[in-house]
Length: 366
Image (cartoon, rainbow, N blue to C red; front, side, top):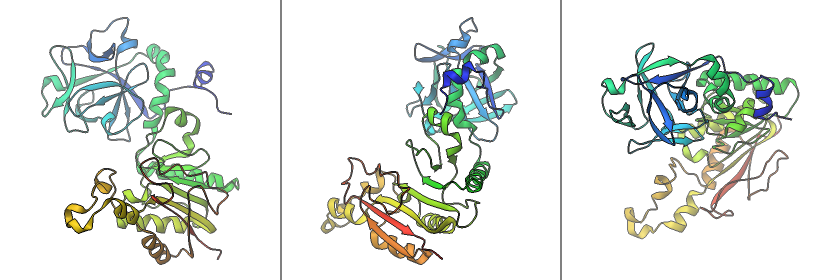
């Protein structure tokens, strides 16, 4: 049974990971980036530094840093340049790219290509297009006595940036697969979990955005690398592969690469289950082709960041081309596999019977 965060802290088992460096950020006028009553600002060093000073967390293998509050939230740079200090998950707006001028002096670039700036009125904004003195920050070491006090709140949220680069993550994934294989345990893979990973599965995500609690209790079940790459695991070793609303977000080339790699690693007789929006149903319901260009329901791509939607016939032809011997179309929450955890998609945005295609690709016994 997994231990709670408090139990881990009380047993002195919680430590800052070795590949993470933590700093305070000092502004050009020798003040610290802080959060006071929800406002991101600058303060002088004081007895309250541990309660208000923002912490920069650095994983030396990654090209971005994150900014944390002592209460366990991420700083987020909004499109309008405002900074918010209440985020629990990491997305693009919570990542800052460091631009170093020396080992302890840097600027921070947001996802909107704007720099963090310490204004003269002591506010912090993220809306500068160039670097001057107000956009440069000095790194300051945090006393160990303060880190010891903060570890219980910041540890859960920095676990996500202990995920390394793609190469190291694929290697960690391979080692987990080999471990399960040696223990003769089923190897089940869930691709593109988003914020809802599956316990008991090896979850593969391009950018992990899961709750800190999952990382704390199931770190060895979440991996950050592109699914349409070589997984570097043995042939015919996986018992089940599943994904929902994932495959339509990658290009046609990536889809074929992904389906081929999945086919390679599946055991004979194993199943690859796909749930994906149906191109034909979407167009039938929302398009008026008599209007030509203007009548095409383009929001199917624009609103959901879809790249290459599929139809049943397209899936069947591609799967057969790759080598799958049986293509079984089914309905929500019905599966030929004992490993199926149930479908969570689609939501209210689509008809659960016709809005998505539910299909199971079988690699038959050799």
